[in-house]
Image 1 (cartoon, rainbow, N blue to C red):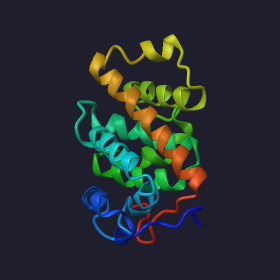
Image 2: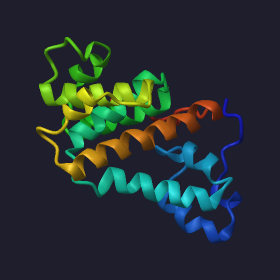
Image 3: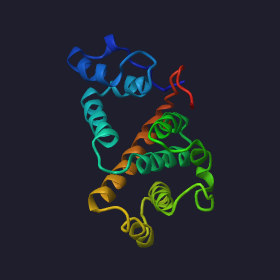
Length: 180
């Protein structure tokens, strides 16, 4: 059970309901529980949500690479909420189920390309150690330009922040949401 009750729309200050309505389309929809907790600090909820929306919808980074990196963050942090939600997003952008099932074997599994391994290596190092080796960072350069490297860095950083909210707050997956 979450450490704070999930706020409902009528419990959110009236001035902040417009953003809450954008983030939470209906009760128990994907994301509703996260935003039901974030709404306790509505000024931060708006900025947090806007940044997340930019990552998911407004970057030039290949969505498959983005979702592999985010899924790895969820996998490594054992965040069921994060991993479940991004499992489904990953499938929507074309990542194969077999790849998601093999994230634990990313270094040796033949289901990943060299580019995907380079992105996963980055996500693993940034998540586990924060610091990333020169070799890992340089491994991104042959196929990502400067903008896309920074978008990957920011995506991994943001979703590491997300799991560091989800897990301490013990936010649970919404009842109707499960891995497809």
